[in-house]
Length: 560
Ligand code: TEU
Ligand code: CA
Image (cartoon, rainbow, N blue to C red; front, side, top):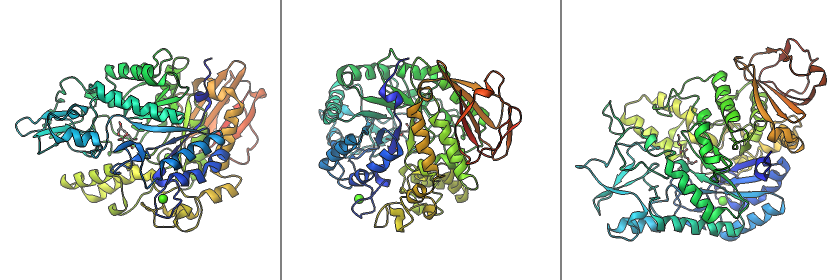
């Protein structure tokens, strides 16, 4: 068993702009985070992953960096950052930074210089091409809608951007640029940060020649993920980054890698590869989209059988070879309880059930802010209440395609990234205790019922359930390292698995349905020796070996 501190850690993701405002401008900030460190310590997490707080025009809430060495004033100062690091460390909490290496802001001095002329020494830091007879250099579609190419009048060339046009992609064929990034990463390491999340790292390499994607329907732009995702050369670059910069430090790394399966993930996280500790996979995040190749804004209903299949493949393929990162939500995804649970009648039960799930899988769990109190999707009625650039671009594009507005809004309610970006709900006071002023984005209407203060006072709350789960994880190594085995693979309502480490065995039973479901105790597990470790219903009726009834969204973890 290859033990590591980052395997035993639980990560809490903070979206700084929406976490806690300390100075009454309606925007979350670093001093706000400092004021909540005790809260996080009490919850029992170990690492804070902080989404970008660098200098940025804020077109994509900080994922458009204009100075990697500076803090955006709305978040605070470098002094505040240093204090946050110190205060976190004093509480045994580690800080993981978000590194955006695929692109910068169009306001970054490198890009301003690159754009200034074809002969600029920094021209090659980005990806510039001539237009083809007034057309874009190729037909690739950007993640945020429209072409990946933005024409520039001054030099008559276009630059490539996989995300918004405010986020030009860096050219990883330029050694000088790469060395500038190394220098920057070393600078943060020297400050004592404990890890990095590598944003969109799967995309830093683009296919040679930037070829057009097949386009049988003659669309103006088409999805072309295969030309800029998980290409072989990414691995060489990551290994080099490790050799030259990361290797000596005992930090933790996680890469954001959409579009791969577990076998391919091993190329990033395999023990012998020396690339990343773990990656965020996206397979379970596409469960409720019709298929690859369709817009991520389309929805379909998903089944538990598919979820089991996907998660089981990741669990078994990586066991003893690499390491998983487990999450059900983040700042780019809808709220987990709204998406995979039930955010009305069984909100509390299903939020606890989902927590039981992703906190008892093999891998490092990532809790996204607000999940520990069961926060739900934003579901704003007016488009004017949305702030996310991807959502707003989609709305405009849908309009030009004459999509009926109710259909557009339904898609936004289901999938918008703003679902999970509303302010953290701290208490029942005005603006949910997030700020004294009107927040940058509306607070969810349900904050009077769903908030941290109420959750702390209620011993049966989701919050206290998370605390218990996190404490159990610290106590029992089997939860961290145990081998996963799926049981009842064909049961459409129950997700059941065991985790085994030497003599210790865990049985996890999760009812994903809103009905009461019968469960037969598996013969191979010693019923008599069982001990209920945790369950999400306060009272557990008399247990039975056969025909044990599991209530809606019930979760139980037994130990042998
Ligand atoms: O997200 C990137 C991201 O989600 C894509 O790489 C993904 O493949 C695609 O969206 C699938 O739908 C990161 C950040 O998490 C996000 O907030 C940023 O907007 C984005 O990068 C650009 O920096
Ligand atoms: Ca503020």
